[in-house]
Every structure is written in structure tokens, then in C-alpha cells.
Length: 87
View 1 (cartoon, one colour):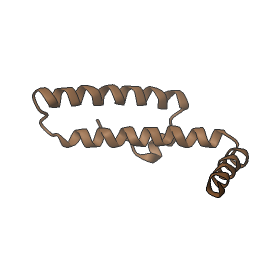
View 2 (cartoon, one colour; view 1 turned 180 degrees about the vertical axis):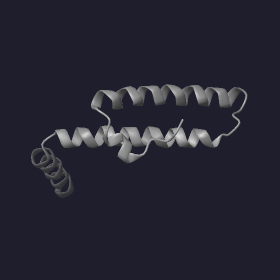
View 3 (cartoon, rainbow, N blue to C red; view 1 turned 90 degrees about the horizontal axis):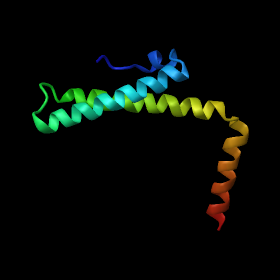
């Protein structure tokens, strides 16, 4: 599997991104299992798939944050942190 680059992921729709995330997680689980039992020809592929998962999850989270109103959502978090800091 070719690694997914950040710019490629931006072109995906939300549904495609979710499907790709599920497929990659499934693939990673199978690869880990195979590696545990008999070993992989190239164990560095595990690293590449793990990093692809991280990229996919990062893009999903970035879109979630963009969807929520930035001014409203972030100020609540900042206010909560200030209250905790002064307590």
C-alpha cells in the first residue's frame, strides 16, 4: 500500500476518509497478527501503515475542529483552562 500523503487526504470526502480509516485499521490489525505468527518480509511496512493511520485520524480531527465554530468552541476551552489554573 502506498502511503497516504496529507495533500491526498484533503481531496477525500468525509465518507471516503471514514472508509479509508476503517480499511487501514483492519489492514494494520491483520498485518500485526501475521507479523506475530510468522513475521513479515518487511516489518517496516507496519510503521508505514501506523503512520497512515495517524495521518487519517489527524485529518478527521482537523475537519471536526473546522466544523465546530472556532470562536465559540475554543474560547470555552480557554476559559475552562483559566478557571482551573486559578483554582
